[in-house]
Structures are given as structure tokens and as C-alpha cells.
Length: 315
Picture (cartoon, helix red, strand yellow):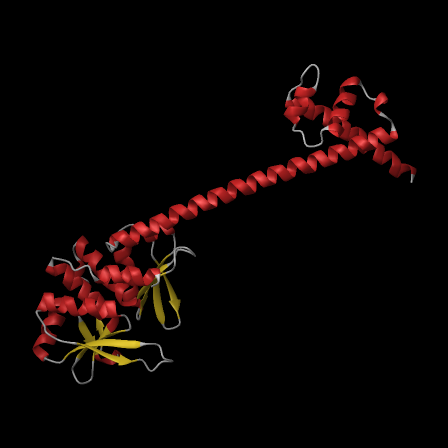
């Protein structure tokens, strides 16, 4: 099962004890997956069994409506099963629509509109509505690969309403248009953790946090290794350049023309090409610090550069 599937499975088994929260969650589910048919049937449809099971349970506990989950094969490229729940009794439909404050838009295929948000006045109901919206049309990427959570809305008004609810929890949700849909999304890892906390997916939250910690540790180790590798390469390249300069000086003018300090460090560098500046300084008598060794090696480099320039002038 994907990480997104595991989150939905966890959320599907969480039934609120408060009726007003159950109403808010049913509102979100019907707003995304429900519609009124031309025959006057309240139709709910999804491809996720965990979602239809949650809707069925909420209907039973909130309105005491006895119905059934129907299943049919999807016609779209063997996509799998489609699960749906239908309520045909006009009184039961009226009860659900009144309780959820939903209204059917007959000019838009019977799609259900959540109206002015009366069912999300309390913080707990906002959490429930967001949970229902994610169950109905949300997804979350595999945190091993990246951080992205999104909820797809069929209308801009619904996306704006959902964005406002999510932002009330200080989560920076954004909206992007994708084909004919409006996608409310959250990208940053810490913000997605907050979203899981809002929806009360506590097990998934801990799993995501564990993955984030491991990824962060791995990235820190990689950064340290890369930094150390870069320093080693820098040191090696500097030592190679120093050895080349010293050999040029030895060949063109000999160490006997250098002062005692420069001649001593030149011989030591050739003898110990892998030694650090500190180690070279400790070999001198008297001992010299890193800055002193570096100063002498720079002087040797300047002398070598001068010899090269003279050679170019002669050519």
C-alpha cells in the first residue's frame, strides 16, 4: 500500500464522537464525491473502499440511515472497482442535505455545494471537513521521494473555501489550476506534518517524521562527506602544485640559492608530499606554525612563477 493509501486507511477508521464533526466530514465527502441524479437519488461514488466504508459508517451513525455499498467494475482501462452508495428515499435525502447544509446545483450535473460554511464554525469541525476532503479527493506523495500533499476540487469556489480552512491552522496552502480542476496543495515537509496533525492522522504523522529524520541525517552525512572530500582535494591539489614549483626551482636555480628557511621547507615538502602544513611545521627546527609554513610555500610559488615568466620572455 502506498503512503497515501495508508494515510487514508488510518483516517477512514477514525469516527468522531461529536455529531457536528461527523456532519462536517460528511459535507466534505459529499461535496467532492456526491451528486443528485436526475431521478432524485443522492449518489456517492469513489474508487477507494476505505472512503466509501467511512461514508457508509458516518451515514449510519449520524442519520441512522440503513443503506448498502454497491460495487461495479470501472470501464476506464481496467482501472479497478467503483464503489457507490445511493439514497433514494426523499425524506432521508432531505435529512442529509439539511444536516450538511448542502444544496444541489441542477445546472452543474447535480453537484453538491457546501454553501457558506455553517458546518465548519468550530475548530474541531474544520479539522473534520479537511479530513473528509482529503479522503474524498486528496493524495500525498511518498515522503522517501519528496513532500507534496494535494486535494483536488472541481470548482474554484470549493478550492478557495478549503484553502481558507487549511490556512486557519497557519498552513500555507496554495491553489494551482490543473486541466479543469483546482488543486489545493502543500509542499514543505514540516507543513505536511502539520496537515497530518490537523487531520489527526497521528500514526502517519509519526511515520513521516521518522522518514524526515532519517533523510535529514543522511543529507547531513552526505554534506559532511562532500565537504571533507572537497577539502582533501584542495589540499592534494595544493601539495601537487607546491611540489611542481619546488622541482622547477631545484632544476633552474638549485636550493643553494635560496635562504635557509625556504630551502629547508622545500626539501621537506618534496620528502613528505602528503604531510599537512602543521606536520611540516613540526618537522622544522625550530618548529614553525601553519601560517609560517604557508608563508614560506607562497614565497617558493612566487619564485617559481617568476622563473616561468622569464622562460616565456626568452621564448
